[in-house]
Amino acid sequence: MAVSTSLTQFLFSHPSTNSKYKEATQSEFLALAGQGKLPLPQLSQWLSQDRLYAEAYLRFIGGVLSRIHLPINPPGDGRTQDTLEWRILRTLQSALDGIVRELAFFEATAKDYGIDLAATSLSDTPGDATFGPNKTTAKYIEIFDSFHGLSSASLTPAEPPQKSLISALVLLWATEKVYYDAWSYAHSQAPSSVPASSDLDGGALRKEFIPNWTSNEFVEFVEGIEVCLNDLASKEASKSGREAVETEALKVWEEVLDLEVGFWPSV
Image: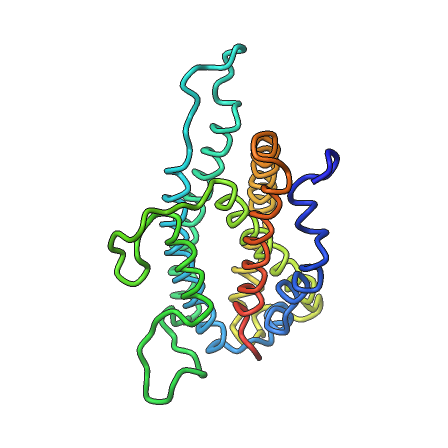
């Protein structure tokens, strides 16, 4: 990580993930979603998994909060809440507030459009109608739960988590950045002359979900995570070296992109 290159720039420009990022943010599922051509059953199947993801995300944020150690002594200028630790804390507070709103938004919108938030996948084993996380969602739940020391299967105490704050912020930034860029791609596919009310999902995506996931507020949230991550990376690099920080971050980045490719169903 050169002096002029931030950690997030390093990750974006890394040759091992260039093509994978496009796969993760420009799938056929997203194109059809933006065009209003995604049938309601398929939207239900995907959104039901996204809801499970969001519930695990709540626990993840709790685990990250436990890694924040606020300054014991105030800075010389007295601007305690401008310190990196306080900025990260406020970012996590925004993440927590946002996901609570998101879950309520899911339920309200599902009710308005007849979306089933416990829909099983068409690819599930015939005769097995039990709803639960698919492979990709289950892996995300496992990763999220690894930050707070609970077993994802039963939410019982597991081995004490050893994940660092750097890994946590890379995971937070990567998932939110990919999500925003993915739905921005979907938005770019929308036909300008076709009303959303004629969409196969009744307009749920183009009228409700996509505007929510591409809003200015969401952009500002993602950018805020990025600033905190890069500042923390610079601080940690001064102690453990740039290469160690890059290696740790790249591992998380690659894992997220692999999962995001699988998060969008085949259509």
